[in-house]
Length: 270
Image 1 (cartoon, helix red, strand yellow):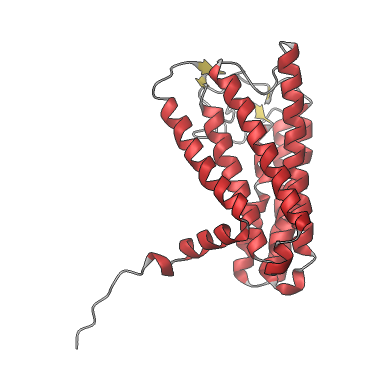
Image 2 (cartoon, one colour):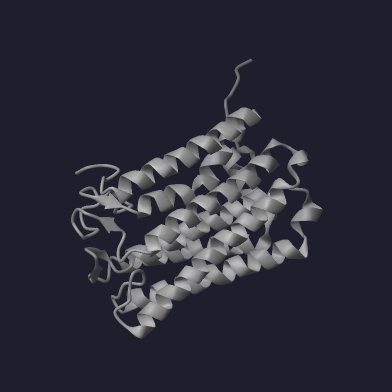
Protein backbone atom coordinates (compact mmCIF):
# COMPACT_ATOMS: atom_id res chain seq x y z
CA UNK A 1 0.00 0.00 0.00
CA UNK A 2 1.44 3.37 -0.98
CA UNK A 3 1.72 6.06 1.61
CA UNK A 4 0.56 9.53 0.58
CA UNK A 5 2.20 12.38 2.44
CA UNK A 6 0.03 15.33 3.29
CA UNK A 7 1.07 18.78 4.40
CA UNK A 8 0.58 19.41 8.13
CA UNK A 9 -2.47 21.40 9.06
CA UNK A 10 -1.81 24.97 10.19
CA UNK A 11 -3.57 24.10 13.44
CA UNK A 12 -0.82 21.58 14.15
CA UNK A 13 2.10 23.96 13.62
CA UNK A 14 4.16 25.65 16.33
CA UNK A 15 3.29 29.05 14.88
CA UNK A 16 -0.41 28.38 15.44
CA UNK A 17 0.31 27.20 18.98
CA UNK A 18 2.29 30.34 19.73
CA UNK A 19 -0.46 32.52 18.27
CA UNK A 20 -3.02 30.78 20.45
CA UNK A 21 -0.86 31.36 23.53
CA UNK A 22 -0.67 35.08 22.73
CA UNK A 23 -4.41 35.19 22.07
CA UNK A 24 -5.35 33.50 25.34
CA UNK A 25 -2.72 35.17 27.52
CA UNK A 26 -4.55 38.50 27.82
CA UNK A 27 -7.39 39.52 25.54
CA UNK A 28 -6.67 43.29 25.70
CA UNK A 29 -3.05 42.72 24.75
CA UNK A 30 -3.99 40.34 21.95
CA UNK A 31 -6.43 42.77 20.37
CA UNK A 32 -3.85 45.54 20.59
CA UNK A 33 -1.25 43.34 18.90
CA UNK A 34 -3.59 42.93 15.92
CA UNK A 35 -4.41 46.65 15.84
CA UNK A 36 -0.76 47.67 15.97
CA UNK A 37 0.25 45.27 13.21
CA UNK A 38 -2.43 46.87 11.05
CA UNK A 39 -1.12 50.29 12.07
CA UNK A 40 2.42 49.33 11.06
CA UNK A 41 1.21 48.14 7.67
CA UNK A 42 -0.64 51.43 7.12
CA UNK A 43 2.47 53.46 7.98
CA UNK A 44 4.44 51.45 5.43
CA UNK A 45 1.79 52.18 2.78
CA UNK A 46 1.93 55.90 3.62
CA UNK A 47 5.63 55.92 2.70
CA UNK A 48 4.72 55.24 -0.94
CA UNK A 49 2.52 58.35 -1.12
CA UNK A 50 4.47 60.81 1.05
CA UNK A 51 7.99 61.80 0.01
CA UNK A 52 8.79 63.91 3.09
CA UNK A 53 11.85 62.95 5.13
CA UNK A 54 13.14 63.26 8.69
CA UNK A 55 16.84 62.58 9.29
CA UNK A 56 17.09 61.23 5.75
CA UNK A 57 14.29 58.63 5.99
CA UNK A 58 10.52 58.72 5.47
CA UNK A 59 8.49 60.60 8.06
CA UNK A 60 6.41 57.41 8.41
CA UNK A 61 9.40 55.14 9.02
CA UNK A 62 9.48 55.68 12.78
CA UNK A 63 5.71 55.21 13.32
CA UNK A 64 5.84 51.95 11.33
CA UNK A 65 8.71 50.62 13.45
CA UNK A 66 7.21 51.71 16.75
CA UNK A 67 3.89 50.09 15.89
CA UNK A 68 5.74 46.87 15.09
CA UNK A 69 7.97 47.05 18.17
CA UNK A 70 5.00 47.59 20.49
CA UNK A 71 3.11 44.75 18.81
CA UNK A 72 6.04 42.43 19.53
CA UNK A 73 6.28 43.66 23.13
CA UNK A 74 2.57 43.22 23.82
CA UNK A 75 2.58 39.80 22.16
CA UNK A 76 5.50 38.76 24.36
CA UNK A 77 3.77 39.90 27.55
CA UNK A 78 0.55 38.15 26.55
CA UNK A 79 2.47 34.97 25.72
CA UNK A 80 4.27 35.18 29.07
CA UNK A 81 0.94 35.45 30.89
CA UNK A 82 -0.24 32.29 29.12
CA UNK A 83 2.61 30.43 30.82
CA UNK A 84 1.33 31.04 34.36
CA UNK A 85 -1.72 29.46 36.05
CA UNK A 86 -4.94 30.84 34.57
CA UNK A 87 -6.30 32.09 37.90
CA UNK A 88 -3.11 34.06 38.60
CA UNK A 89 -3.12 35.62 35.13
CA UNK A 90 -6.59 37.04 35.81
CA UNK A 91 -5.62 38.92 38.99
CA UNK A 92 -6.75 42.59 39.10
CA UNK A 93 -3.13 43.73 39.52
CA UNK A 94 -2.27 42.10 36.18
CA UNK A 95 -5.19 43.81 34.47
CA UNK A 96 -4.21 47.20 35.90
CA UNK A 97 -0.60 46.74 34.78
CA UNK A 98 -1.74 45.71 31.29
CA UNK A 99 -4.09 48.71 31.12
CA UNK A 100 -1.29 51.13 32.04
CA UNK A 101 0.96 49.46 29.47
CA UNK A 102 -1.65 49.89 26.75
CA UNK A 103 -2.43 53.50 27.64
CA UNK A 104 1.29 54.34 27.53
CA UNK A 105 1.76 52.59 24.20
CA UNK A 106 -1.17 54.23 22.47
CA UNK A 107 -0.20 57.60 23.91
CA UNK A 108 3.31 57.24 22.47
CA UNK A 109 1.96 56.23 19.08
CA UNK A 110 -0.50 59.12 18.97
CA UNK A 111 2.30 61.61 19.61
CA UNK A 112 4.75 59.99 17.17
CA UNK A 113 2.11 59.97 14.42
CA UNK A 114 1.17 63.60 15.19
CA UNK A 115 4.78 64.72 14.81
CA UNK A 116 5.28 62.58 11.70
CA UNK A 117 2.25 64.15 10.05
CA UNK A 118 3.94 67.53 10.52
CA UNK A 119 7.33 66.22 9.33
CA UNK A 120 8.72 66.93 12.79
CA UNK A 121 10.87 64.75 15.03
CA UNK A 122 9.15 63.21 18.03
CA UNK A 123 12.39 62.25 19.80
CA UNK A 124 15.08 64.75 20.85
CA UNK A 125 12.72 67.56 19.87
CA UNK A 126 13.30 70.49 22.19
CA UNK A 127 12.95 73.19 19.53
CA UNK A 128 9.74 74.43 21.17
CA UNK A 129 8.00 74.25 24.54
CA UNK A 130 5.41 71.81 23.15
CA UNK A 131 8.18 69.65 21.71
CA UNK A 132 10.05 69.55 25.02
CA UNK A 133 6.88 68.71 26.95
CA UNK A 134 5.90 66.06 24.44
CA UNK A 135 9.33 64.47 24.56
CA UNK A 136 9.22 64.49 28.35
CA UNK A 137 5.82 62.80 28.37
CA UNK A 138 7.17 60.18 25.96
CA UNK A 139 9.86 59.45 28.53
CA UNK A 140 7.18 58.90 31.17
CA UNK A 141 5.34 56.62 28.77
CA UNK A 142 8.49 54.62 28.02
CA UNK A 143 9.17 54.12 31.74
CA UNK A 144 5.56 53.05 32.24
CA UNK A 145 5.95 50.44 29.51
CA UNK A 146 9.10 48.96 31.04
CA UNK A 147 8.00 49.16 34.68
CA UNK A 148 4.69 47.42 33.97
CA UNK A 149 6.52 44.73 31.98
CA UNK A 150 8.90 44.21 34.90
CA UNK A 151 5.99 44.02 37.34
CA UNK A 152 4.16 41.44 35.24
CA UNK A 153 7.43 39.52 34.83
CA UNK A 154 7.87 39.46 38.58
CA UNK A 155 4.31 38.20 39.12
CA UNK A 156 4.95 35.43 36.58
CA UNK A 157 8.34 34.53 38.07
CA UNK A 158 6.71 34.06 41.48
CA UNK A 159 4.80 31.16 39.91
CA UNK A 160 8.04 29.56 38.63
CA UNK A 161 7.15 26.26 40.27
CA UNK A 162 4.60 25.92 37.46
CA UNK A 163 7.42 24.98 35.09
CA UNK A 164 10.53 26.09 33.19
CA UNK A 165 8.58 28.11 30.61
CA UNK A 166 6.88 30.09 33.37
CA UNK A 167 10.20 30.81 35.08
CA UNK A 168 11.81 31.79 31.79
CA UNK A 169 8.94 34.08 30.79
CA UNK A 170 9.21 35.94 34.08
CA UNK A 171 12.99 36.30 33.93
CA UNK A 172 12.91 37.46 30.31
CA UNK A 173 10.40 40.25 30.97
CA UNK A 174 12.29 41.51 34.02
CA UNK A 175 15.71 41.50 32.36
CA UNK A 176 14.36 43.09 29.19
CA UNK A 177 12.76 45.86 31.24
CA UNK A 178 15.90 46.58 33.26
CA UNK A 179 18.29 46.55 30.29
CA UNK A 180 15.95 48.53 28.06
CA UNK A 181 15.36 51.15 30.77
CA UNK A 182 19.06 51.57 31.56
CA UNK A 183 20.00 52.03 27.90
CA UNK A 184 16.94 54.20 27.28
CA UNK A 185 17.72 56.61 30.13
CA UNK A 186 21.26 57.12 28.83
CA UNK A 187 19.94 57.54 25.29
CA UNK A 188 17.36 60.15 26.28
CA UNK A 189 19.95 62.18 28.21
CA UNK A 190 21.67 63.07 24.92
CA UNK A 191 20.64 65.41 22.12
CA UNK A 192 20.59 62.62 19.53
CA UNK A 193 21.15 58.89 19.17
CA UNK A 194 24.33 59.37 17.11
CA UNK A 195 27.81 59.31 18.63
CA UNK A 196 30.16 60.55 15.94
CA UNK A 197 29.77 59.60 12.29
CA UNK A 198 27.26 61.06 9.85
CA UNK A 199 24.33 62.73 11.63
CA UNK A 200 21.69 61.06 9.45
CA UNK A 201 19.73 57.82 9.25
CA UNK A 202 20.10 57.76 5.46
CA UNK A 203 22.43 54.98 4.42
CA UNK A 204 22.16 53.28 7.80
CA UNK A 205 21.83 49.56 8.45
CA UNK A 206 19.07 48.01 6.34
CA UNK A 207 15.65 48.03 8.06
CA UNK A 208 16.95 49.46 11.35
CA UNK A 209 18.75 52.55 9.95
CA UNK A 210 21.42 52.24 12.65
CA UNK A 211 24.50 54.27 11.87
CA UNK A 212 27.29 52.49 9.99
CA UNK A 213 29.71 55.41 10.30
CA UNK A 214 29.65 56.01 14.06
CA UNK A 215 28.07 54.89 17.31
CA UNK A 216 24.29 54.57 17.58
CA UNK A 217 22.78 54.41 21.08
CA UNK A 218 19.59 52.84 19.75
CA UNK A 219 21.34 49.50 19.25
CA UNK A 220 21.90 48.70 22.94
CA UNK A 221 18.40 49.95 23.75
CA UNK A 222 16.98 47.59 21.11
CA UNK A 223 18.99 44.55 22.23
CA UNK A 224 18.20 45.20 25.89
CA UNK A 225 14.46 45.55 25.35
CA UNK A 226 14.27 42.49 23.13
CA UNK A 227 15.96 40.28 25.68
CA UNK A 228 12.33 39.49 26.48
CA UNK A 229 12.15 37.66 23.15
CA UNK A 230 15.71 36.28 23.00
CA UNK A 231 15.89 34.56 26.39
CA UNK A 232 12.74 32.40 26.02
CA UNK A 233 14.35 30.68 23.02
CA UNK A 234 16.76 29.06 25.47
CA UNK A 235 13.86 27.35 27.25
CA UNK A 236 13.46 25.12 24.20
CA UNK A 237 16.49 23.23 25.54
CA UNK A 238 14.49 22.19 28.60
CA UNK A 239 17.49 23.04 30.79
CA UNK A 240 17.40 25.82 33.42
CA UNK A 241 21.17 26.22 33.15
CA UNK A 242 20.86 27.09 29.48
CA UNK A 243 18.16 29.65 30.25
CA UNK A 244 20.22 31.40 32.91
CA UNK A 245 23.28 31.17 30.68
CA UNK A 246 21.35 32.89 27.90
CA UNK A 247 20.24 35.58 30.35
CA UNK A 248 23.85 36.25 31.39
CA UNK A 249 25.04 36.31 27.78
CA UNK A 250 22.28 38.79 26.89
CA UNK A 251 23.28 41.10 29.74
CA UNK A 252 26.95 41.08 28.73
CA UNK A 253 26.06 41.47 25.05
CA UNK A 254 23.92 44.52 25.78
CA UNK A 255 26.71 46.02 27.92
CA UNK A 256 29.31 45.37 25.19
CA UNK A 257 27.15 46.93 22.47
CA UNK A 258 26.42 49.89 24.72
CA UNK A 259 30.16 50.43 25.29
CA UNK A 260 30.79 50.27 21.55
CA UNK A 261 28.04 52.74 20.71
CA UNK A 262 28.96 55.18 23.49
CA UNK A 263 32.54 55.11 22.17
CA UNK A 264 31.42 56.01 18.66
CA UNK A 265 31.95 52.55 17.17
CA UNK A 266 29.19 51.27 14.83
CA UNK A 267 27.83 47.75 15.15
CA UNK A 268 28.47 47.29 11.42
CA UNK A 269 30.78 49.65 9.58
CA UNK A 270 29.94 50.88 6.09
